[in-house]
Length: 148
Image 1 (cartoon, rainbow, N blue to C red):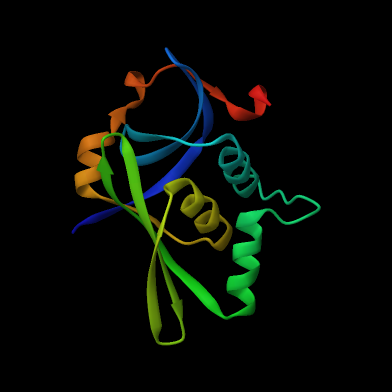
Image 2: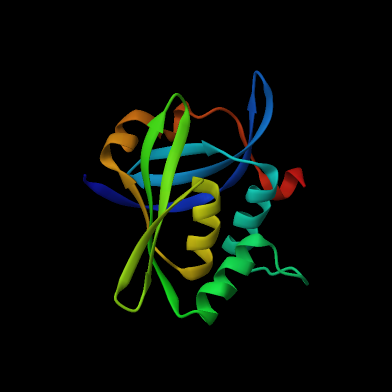
């Protein structure tokens, strides 16, 4: 399977017919972006990671990164492998010494951890072909900071 490296463009609130939806926007190539609808707490966590902000007490994604550090585990990548009926599927690729593990995860959790650990975010070419849209095609996006 071929993968493309992408970057997190930002976290937004997308105004849809069903209501407001937290959305992480991945920049996949030139003018193409991939919106992934996520939960509010994951949106806050990703926003904190993008802004290098930490809360007084660790949240789940901070706990993961601390655990990885203490156990000498590195994160090789987050791979977003599949899109099925509007649901994205992802895997954390982690390594401890000479042992590699692949852990199923929600893309939003994986993105929050990858940003903290500065690990690459990879999207399969198949998923990019199914989900990437031009910026102009996206519904109205409002930066999450102005929403909170």
